[in-house]
Image (cartoon, rainbow, N blue to C red; front, side, top):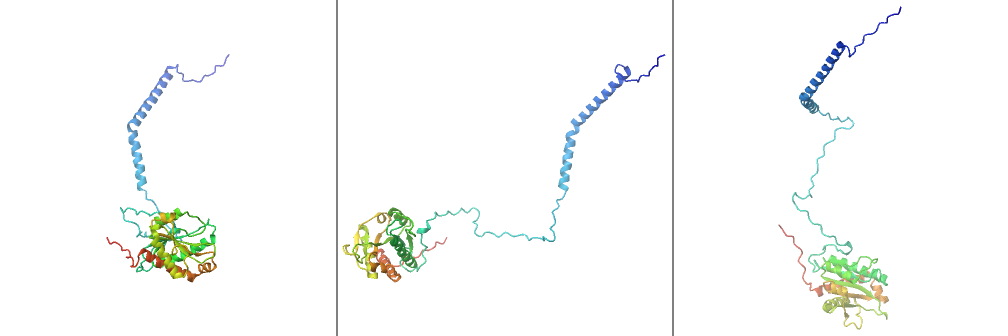
Length: 305
């Protein structure tokens, strides 16, 4: 006789009772989803806004705690800024900066005796020869004469412009003239020794036709102060000629031949400091005479606003 096995009851869709229960579960799930979605759509934005406001209020309400200094550090005093007394007031236009002039050619402002007739005069000194000249040793002494005369004239209140301050470079006559013209020189003196065959001791000056009186005054005063002799055949020590410097510098110009570098007596004198002082006095006196500077120039006055 066969043994009858008990079968486990399984809820089947085909069973009316099971199908009914399944339908109820599906309807409950759909209803739950509908209610949840409806609530989220209706109340979701308000909930998000409330949460955001709560977070912001929490952040603002939380005080910021500054770290306390340790005993070793101590409390540092608060520095008080120092006002800049040189700062311009608001709205003040910035002052324009003048274009710099090469320092090699600039003299110090007038610092000498304001009662001197040289006060306020701008004198150009051109030490002839330069680094490219075959007479390099003479070029150095020409520069030494110019520097010595520069100091002398500045002590009298003049402003002195040098065409060069060393012997390494080379300047054309046109460049030298441009320096003096741009500086507004009152007068120019070119200083040079000479190499004369025959070893004679002599000096003379060279000036253009328009500057003959100026040149004659310089050479006459130079001879009177130094005791030098004027070179023969130069018409009272003055030769009439011109070059690019005298033509383009914009003021009276003379080339003063200080002496004969090939003459032993002249060469010794031209390297002697006492003789140089007499040279300075003679040239300065000649300048006063040539320029008609018998009265002191009026010192500059500052305008009062």
